[in-house]
Every structure is written in structure tokens, then in C-alpha cells.
Length: 427
Image 1: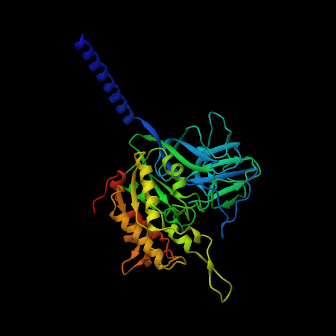
Image 2: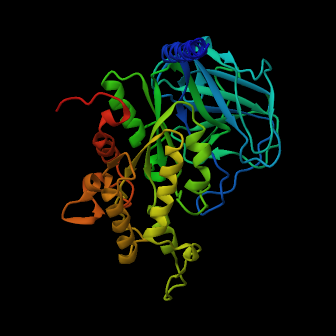
Image 3: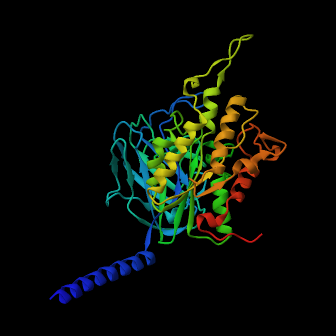
């Protein structure tokens, strides 16, 4: 009897193991959703040069996106995550972009949400469209057109997107090839991501950072930011299973809000919620050092006044703890974390020796810790060899902190592709 029971238990165990093995084999052969394009939305805070957004009423908004991998089926993620009232999208279309606000009409598709062409998104919530069959090649521009009857007073947007957006109206013009006399605006509105239905071995690398990740200094449609240039490197190597998405926000900090929520606050939304994420590159901390050192111009002949962020000074230890939190939270979800060293900022109006000492201390920790899965030493490649507190002249955009196009390319070229699961081309 005991032998029969033992045999039965072994049979059940074997069947369970076989079922799990079959399930795993099916899983690896199947497809899943992978984040192929993103932009980190937030509620813009009125700052000099960035006036508050006007309410949107009875307008068609056309947002241009650019997935870094291709596919035949995708879905769009919309966002009202920073709204204080429900957001109604009365109509939505997707099409390949021709140029500027013009679409390729033969590729135009209606977006639906649970089979309905209209959706009302609660305040604080995102929304996925239904899957849509549309063939998209890597790096092809894709236009998302939304009719917003409004009024929408608080807008979820990304101020300095990689491509202009277009406003037209009044009325629903989502299916029109050309928007009539559109207003051109730099922010991206309401559209936070595009997912591709891709083979199960496809994954996403998230570039998580501030304006240096965002790609400050580029013109609309240039795509010179380091994440896009990294994606191009992968494509040139024939890699079709690694997407790279840009979750940089200009002015973003690890520990405090202003331009977007702090990195610790937005981490779940901007990294963990993205499907298919396998790796992330963290380049954050320079604004935590610089913002408290902003000095406001005084009256003529008087000393500069203390800046608005002086009370938010941070230490190297506090930044290190913040980075460790990001690492731990990513690891809990099986995401590999690559730590990027902070690049130079001497020559800016926020530079001083105490801030440089903090940058050096953080970089020393990044280079010496075993907390990261790998280190990407952007500082080493960007800095002036004879004057390491400064950006190399050939990589300086002119403001002494943001890289030029050549600087962003040097950053992208530094990253070993095998870290992301790609093949490293022999030198």
C-alpha cells in the first residue's frame, strides 16, 4: 500500500513537472507585449521659459512617436495620470507618419478601447488601447491622433519631447491626412507609450534619467539622444529583439520633485509598469547636486540671491541611498540595473567645489560598488582628460553640461551591447 501511495505521488509530481516544462516551452515560443517607445509624462510646473499649459478644449492633438523595434501588432498607452478630472478621448486614430503633421492615409486605423472608439480615463489612471494590426518598421514614425472635447485643465505631458506635436480644431480631425493650419508645440500630450506584440525573447532596456538622457539640445525629429543612438547601434548589428526606450525628464532629480516627480516617486510608473523590461540604465543625480546651488540674479551692484531650492541640498550619502533604492526595487522585478557615472558640470552657474566633491564621491561609489549589475562610465568618456571637472570641448553642446550630438554618440558607443543581450561587434 505504501509503495502504491509513493508511486502515485511520484506520478503526480512527474505530471506536474511535465506540465510546467510544456508551459515553459510554449511560453518561450509565444509572443508578449514589449515596450517599444515611451515618453515620461508629468504635470508641468510653471518655471522660467516653461509657462503653464492652457486648458485643451475641442481640439485634435496629433502626437508623433518612434518605436525602436518593429512589429505587426501594437497597442497605445494613454495617460491621465496627472489629471484632476476624468479625461474623455472622443476619437483616436493611429497611422504611419508622412512628415510633420501629415499621415499616410492608407495606414490609418481607428483605435478602440474595449471595442469602443471613445474612452473616459479616470483622474490618475492610464489606459491601453485594444491591439491594432498595423505593420511598423523599426524607427518608423507613428502618429497618434486624439480628439479631446475637453475642457482639460491639468494636462499629462512631456515638455521637451523628441518630436513636435500638432493641434488643430475645433472638431474631430483625427482621420484627416493633413491637419489644417495646426499649431506646433514641443510637448507630447496624453500618449505615454507604444507596445509591440513581439517574440518572447524580445525585451526592453529603459534609459532612466534627466535631461542628459532626454537628449537636451536636439531639434524636433533629430533623435540624437543617447538612447536612440544606442538603439541604432543595436539595429546595425542586426538585433531586432532589444528595444530601447527613453524615460528621461529634463531637470529630474532622485530625491525631490519639480520637473516631474522625483525618480523614486515615478519609478514604478516609468520603469516597472513597462512590459518586457529586462534592463535599465540609471543616470541621475546631477540635478540633485546643482539645483540647491542655483543663484538668482540680484539687483545691479548687489550679490546674487539664494535660489528657490537652497533648502533641498543633499549629500553624497543621500544620493547613494536613493540609487540603492532604485536598484533594490528593480531587482525585485528581475530587472538588471546598470549604473552610469555622473558627467561633469564645471562652467555652469551651479558649479562649485562642494558640488563637485559630491559628484566625485557618488562616482567613486558607483565605480566601486557591487550593487549594480554593471557600470557604464559616462564620466570617463565625456570629461576633459586634462581638466576632469569639465566636459570635453568636442562633446560640449555649449552649456558645459549637456553633450553635443557627438557627445551623445560617444555615450551610446560606450555601452557594451552584450550587457543588453546583444552581440558585441568585434573591434
